[in-house]
Image 1 (spheres, rainbow, N blue to C red):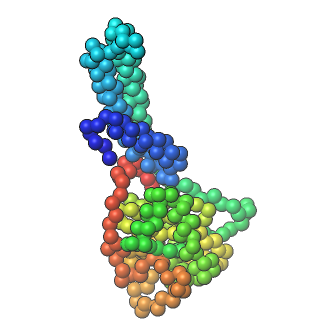
Image 2: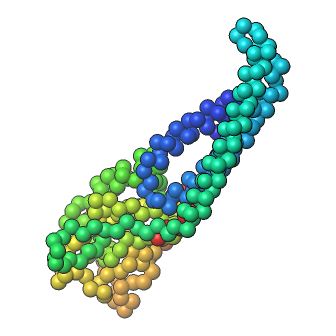
Image 3: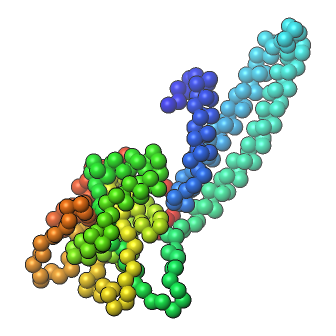
Length: 285
């Protein structure tokens, strides 16, 4: 945390934070997050410009105490003046950096990032139906553990962890039997969505929930019709039952696949809230 009074400690922490950002920004799971980073960089460059001016002022104010290694005051004072001049020139260059980043922020704010399109690997002319089956849905404390894993190791690690809940045909059969099959993964306005190797990870740190879905490809004659499929949001929120006139069927989910999206009686908004970082200022669909 910054001290706001110790320049040595704060300079070391700023250097470490920039080193961490250089490592973390190698890959963005959601390109809309770059908008937030641009905004923070603009503020950081503005603060750095102020630091350079203050360092230059310090060299000028205390040049009467400047000496070289041989004790020559005149040589030391000249070096102090030269250092201040270089700092002022560096600050002038930072003004251009600030303006460029500010322009970048403006351009980036007009981008609506769409989900990465799925790539079909079927042979030309082959007709298949694509659906998504629920592998696992977590909220509360169980979701917090996965959200911490995402913060610490990234979404790839979270996907690998949640794949342990996928038991292949057993998971698929349970999803088909209980209606947890969707045309498209759910994407709420504040949800983060990552698709990787046939799996889609959806998570929301503010609402405290995590889900993993697997792509399921079926022949056209075996595809679910409109009366059988529900949207992901209906299944998660419990709104919009398949048949209001029909009595609720008993749920028979295998023990190992028990943590699937909640049924209608549960309110998924009741999950404990988690604190999250600054909200993304980009547009993401």
